[in-house]
Picture (tube, rainbow, N blue to C red):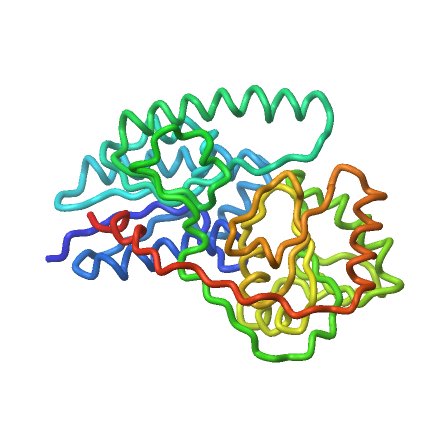
Length: 330
């Protein structure tokens, strides 16, 4: 009988960032451990929707992860010849997960560390003080309890003095640049998701100012504007075909390597990003830094770029790095 890995996932939705990342991780578990049987545990989507209606945002942030910890403890105690894995949600600020998971739990990609634009004193207190305190608690228990840890990006790299057992930029694993030689007929694409960290208000304000003079498309959550080509949720295949026909994209401020950003960069779309971030050398030639904290300067800079003759992006290549292989070997 094959040894089993019991995997907890709060989100396996193929249309969400967390779900896409989780499926990528599960596929890698299967790929690098063919002799192990992967058993995924989660709550059915209909029940999750009901929980969100009742409890709101704390469903994803606290209720589902805590329930996942309880499920894994039950499996840890009751099952023999097994391994335990917690995939998502796994933000670094949620120190309770790192403290209370069963011993030797395999961790999925840790997330967090996104840049937040200047805002209220409440935002400052939450982001600069409280979350950093939570980070320190999580890091303490990661160092005490885990032999290795995987991060989706490098946004939290500065939090780790020793990086011998830490793997960064998992989202860039399997990055492949492709250009299908399509005519790039759209000027600018936006991904719409109503979330405070993604500053949807800023994105909608930009769209409203640019819609009359440029060919703009959006996908994700729908917005009510007849002057914009609004495509709603797209599967991966349709999104790639769309990106191959697009010149520029605008990223939300919190993460320069969101899954949307990676899809854009891998399909030859130049990316506008928050200048407070520092891109990797491999991608910086196709990324355009902008000041997101001053709307007038931001709008002027985007218009200036869109009005210039479009130049073809440079091909992006990463060295074949097999460091992730060691993470998935158990």
